[in-house]
Image (cartoon, rainbow, N blue to C red):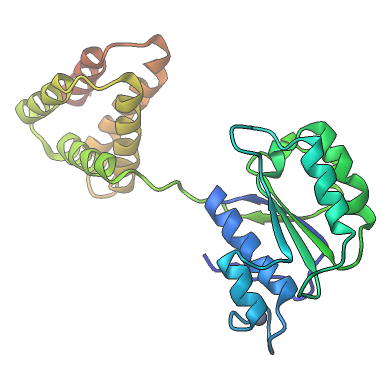
Length: 253
Ligand SMILES: [Zn+2]
């Protein structure tokens, strides 16, 4: 995804939206842009700062994440970052701190960073990455410029995608016998409730995309899948769910 970077960079961004990967990729590009000493728009991608930043080996780029086996970023880590920010850069013009995920900082850690976020040294830049920005203190959020990424669909597991495609095809075009046979075969696989739910949800997506090609049958299939989704809270067995789909599909309207 090619997101335009602002022409003049703020000293702190709160990167939200997208996926964990797209947020991290944007942070790496921004880090290179802060440090780039090439000609033209930054990051040039070819100067030594850009290359080191892209490779994750620039001494002036620090990534702060939870320690191994920890879910939170603790106050000690935040204090260490804060002290480091007051030490001048090694090679570059700036020092860049990527906090990923920033929403893993506990409140004490967030509080420890308030001052440096507000008026740290001019060379320090902060990139806070958050899938759940609501977990951040208002005081942290208000000190960062928002940088929201457009939502991205999570990639679908290829095996699930293939099964879902087959199921969508069956529900849209199979006759009563083929559908009963196909759904019985699926039931014999003894899918777990969450696997079946994921499969049906993906089949629903695919049928929705093909609705224009087969409106009547497609609408019936979508109604049946939606009812299954809504009934999933009652934990019906896979046999019930699949039987319901077959019955709904061939019931007279
Ligand atoms: Zn460069």
